[in-house]
Length: 434
Image (tube, rainbow, N blue to C red; front, side, top):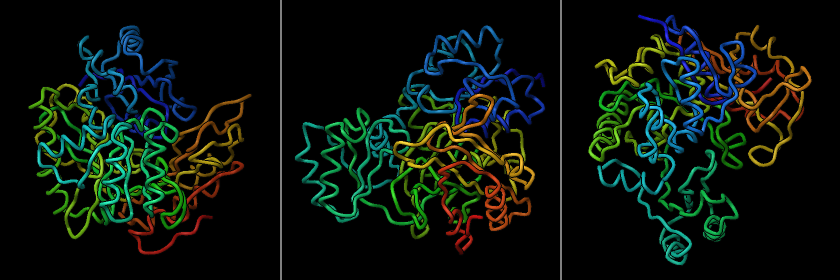
C-alpha cells in the first residue's frame, strides 16, 4: 500500500497518543500535527493552525498534499471542519457536525437514545424558561442528583449533587450561565445510575465498526473518587467489568442502533464513537456519547493494539472497514495523569518540568497534554500536564499500574497533582505513588 501523509488536528494527551501510534505505522509517510505540542515534535511536523477553521484546515491539506485528516478534539467537529473537508473530497476521520451533535448537545443525544431504544437513564431537559419545572423534577428524584450541561464544557459539565439544596443551587447557576457559561443554557437532569463506569471506542465507517479494548477512567480529582469532576485523572485497559457478554450487549443494543439511527436521519457516522457506560448487574446503560477518542483512555487503549491503527482510521474515512467487529489487541496498560495545582479550576502555569527521560528509561510512555517550551525549558501550560503510561505485555494490570507509578515518580514539577489509586478497583488494592 502507498504511504500516507496524515494531518492530525489537536494538541493534547489524546493527540500525542494518536500521533505516537500513527507514526509507528509502515503506511505513515509523513505526519503533520496541528498545532501539536512539544512531545509531538519528535513524531512529525508541527503546524500552527486554527483547527476550528474549516477553510484554514482545507488550505493546509492542499498545501501539504495531505491524504488523510484525523480530528482529535471535539471542538473542530462541532464547528463543522469534517463537513468542509468532505465537501472538498478529502478523506477525514471524524463525524460531521450533525452526527457530532451526539456530543455537543446532550439533550439531543438523550432524545436520540429514546427514539432508537438505546438503554440510558430516565431524564428530562430544562432551560431558563422552565427552571421551576426543573426544580419540581429534581424534587421527584432521590439523591444523589445528576445535572449535565447540554453543551460542550470540556468534560467538566456534570454535577453530581448529594443533597436537594446543592442540586437546586447547581441548576440555578447552570441556567443563569454563572457555572458553565453557554454550555449550561440547557440542562439535562437524569436519574442517578449506580454501578461501575467504562468506556468503549468504536471506529465507524457509517455502516461497519471495529471495537477497541474497553477502558475505565477516573473522573474525580481525589483518591477514592472524591473531589470535583475533571477531564480524567488516569485510566487503565482492559476494564475487567466489561465482559464478553457486556461487549455483545453494547454492540447489539447501542453501537448498531446508533449507526442505523444516524443513517436513517441522513447523518452517517464516520469516526470514533465513544460510548460511556454504567454497568450494573451484568447490564450496561449509556451515560454519554462522545464523538471522538476519550482522554485519557486513548493513552491506554492504543498501545494495546496488535494491528495498524492507521489502516483502521483510513478505512473508516473511506468507507472500507473490515467486516470484523473487534480489533486485535493484547496486554494491559495504565495511565497516571499529572495535573497542575488548582486543577480543574484556575491552575499554575510556567512550572519547569524535569525527569521525563528518566521516566522513559523506567519503561514509561510519557504523553504531553498541557506543556510548552519557554526559554528553552519544558514547562507546564495547562490543567492536565502529562500522562505517564506503562504497558504489561503479559496482561498483568497490577504490573502495568506499578510500573506507571514507578515511571511517574521520576518526573517533577512544582504543584504536581496525582491520584494514588488508579486501577485500584480492578486490581483490588490501593497503589501508592512513589
